[in-house]
Amino acid sequence: MRVRRIALTTCLLVAATSAGARDAFAEPVRSAASGATRGSKIVEPPASDPVATSLAHFEASIQRITLPNGLRVVLNRDPTSATVAVSVTYGVGSINEVTGQSGFAHLFEHMMFQGSKHAAKGAHFKLITERGGTLNGTTDSDRTNYFEELPQNELALALWLESDRMRWLSVTPENFENQRAVVEEEYRMRVQNQPYALGTMRLSELVFQGYPPYAHPTIGSMADLDAAKFEWVKAFHDRYYAPNNAVLTIAGNFEPERALALVNEYFGPAQPTPTEPPPPPSPPTEPSHGSARVTDDNAHTPAVLFGYEIPPSRAPDHYALDLASVILAGGETSRLYRTLVHDEASAEEVSAWTDGHRGPDQLSVMAVLTEKGRLGDVEAKLEAAIERLRSTPPSRAELERAKHRIRTGFLFELQTNLARATQLGEFEALYGDARLLASEPSRYEAVTPEEVRSAAARWLVPGRRSEVEVMPRGKEATP
Image: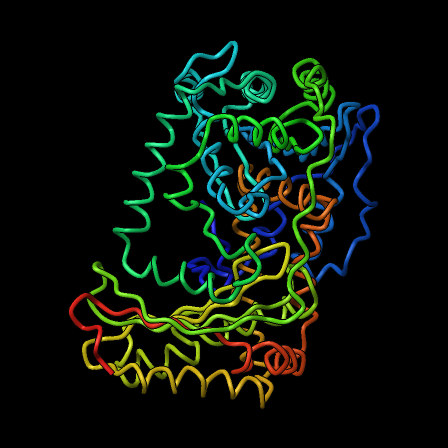
């Protein structure tokens, strides 16, 4: 499962130099394939802005094609690389699950590796790893993706494997039963045995109560999985795992004409689903809020979490709130770290993040207390720091540090073919155009100090706040 936590990105690398920024992205594809929609023409920024130059080249290097069966294809070529990455992003996540049938999208993250018509169970892992490749899949609220990275001469293998499971996945009662058991074991490992995980899940339930698509966790309810019938799971697969609900992305060293020929050969015969997947329900007009205390057997000290419903990802205020979360708890220079961790030692850890939902999103602030910390005092300090953001714009120097943190993480992450493949696929699937990814840094750069204050004053107010206190077993009565 994946949770996007922009404010938690730890940037251990220095800012991109001119040479580093130039090498970060692929050069534009010189030869257009038939039917391709080319990236926009490069408009060279000033020579003193190497980051903008890299991003302009990156945007222009992206090709977009749609096959007759509805499969969207995104190409991003880097002829200097020794590898190629393939990602298939399906427009299905936990947001598409109905009440009583949660966890199906995550279940298929596991089912997808259980074999297909021409690849036996375990063959996908074996064939990729024997050739020096890596592979995996992730699920979140809005999409599921599957990906491989291989030596550049193994592109055909990755495409063949992905097409085989798109067309002929082994959705059988036997595979369903064994993967249901695997998911339940994962739940015990990643939720029941993970400190503070139950608290973060409870926070989302409070923030999105009345809006089931985001109120339930991506991993699902174990009661729902226990009660699930094979017929329900099969119907879920048939509705969502089809070419007209998918994006295929190829990034790295490949020849576009050869790649498109392989794509057409392997994916062209895949049959689209006959009906469009139903849209998720509209979110409630009024935000919900509440409070809860959760007992956690794995927590050694208490923790407090604040959560707020905020605008969707890529909304103007969302960029300002991402920056607000960095200002609050993004690293050792952040406000909450300096106050609660460094100066007072009342918290051993502070963090703030946004979840990256396409539909209404969530901003969370969390403090894990030390033995000397008191819940009431830490809660008051959290609210005081947020009130300061609501009432007073951050300094330009403080805002620039937050922008630098996000920009640096963005640039260095996209140096890998696999990161570009997965993120381009996500932007194409969720926002309709993979090229929008290249404009993300400029959206943050445009945010002003007053816009940070205004967004905080609009969205991070006590009347919109949900709160969870996490208590270790035996300390539930602690004030």
